[in-house]
Length: 472
Image (cartoon, rainbow, N blue to C red; front, side):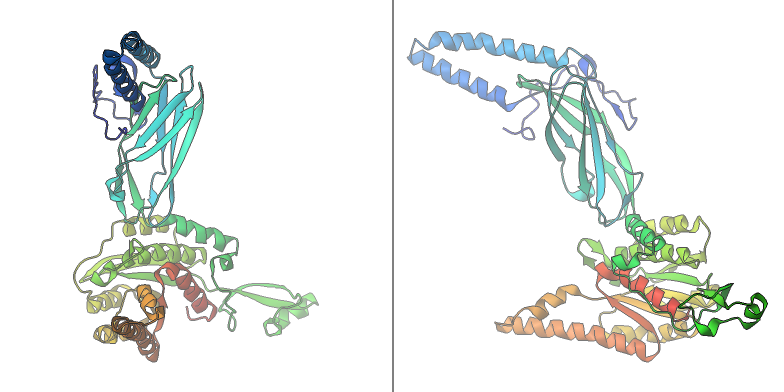
């Protein structure tokens, strides 16, 4: 009989300490909070004793041994109880997590246990997981030496933003005898929020600061022409563009001097996120909205690092929020808090209201990264006039998603009539996506058709390309 299925046959002297609500404070062991669970070996021993008693009835030579067993089992059971309960607070534990978790990423959870028994304690740990993971518990078995600490580590992978409630850490300790086990229940009830993927943001931030973005698949974009912002005059070195020679400075210094330029700064970059029903489609656990939110956080951080201003616009049947583009230190935290609470709706998005709000509230020409999803050309046509109007006043990039599941049907050899039908339909939908790209490009609207997993990389590439071409 396993621990999970074993009934609590003996649970006495239990006094719940309702005032002990601190995250790392245990319900005290010893007689103030005693909880006993019988183990499988005890049941096996009792079953063996019953067998001996039955055989002793038929074979008198075995009867004395069976009677001795009736005395030995209680002695060992009493000794086990004394060993486990003679000291208080001999097992301590705490769960360590970040103050917030990152959505769509592997997050590490650590449990630190301390054994103050004078013998190696055999430990079974059951960590009560948040209900979002649909896992009743996380279980570990280990042995901790006397006076030793041990750290356990496991990974959770949340796929939804929101609050995640962890329950208690249940620690079951056994002595070397192993007939009973004592439960320690650590009051680790805690609520941890899951935010948009800040781990992904930090990854690209570190790569951008170290100029190693190519390691993450970011292309090196050759700059076209010269940038508009003057930086300084410096001495010519081999490789500098002759067209940047400053002849007046050269005459004064009596050596070759050139003008040095830098990327234009303080350009406004808005991530415009469609919150309508088209963004509810799931892909590998995350919705398209969550992919868009994670990418928006990454590109906003990259834009701020590049000395541009970052802002957020979310909309569905109405414009839900507009965070003006800024470059202040607190801007990224504002973006993170705004994106944390966004949810998709079931209504169709109103691009007309989006256009009106952008027209009235954003006066400076800006880069608009519009995250949405179009499945057909007819769906695009209904919104195209508003996209064209936006593209007149701003640099618009429409970002939508490939249906990667269709590729499985396209690549699968058609054997049956049903296979032919599925493959034809899949090819039709894939072709529709390419037609949407052509239709947008016909009106001078930039677009990205991307696999959801490559969304952040492709968005950064497009941003750097537009910067290099001097379009923003």
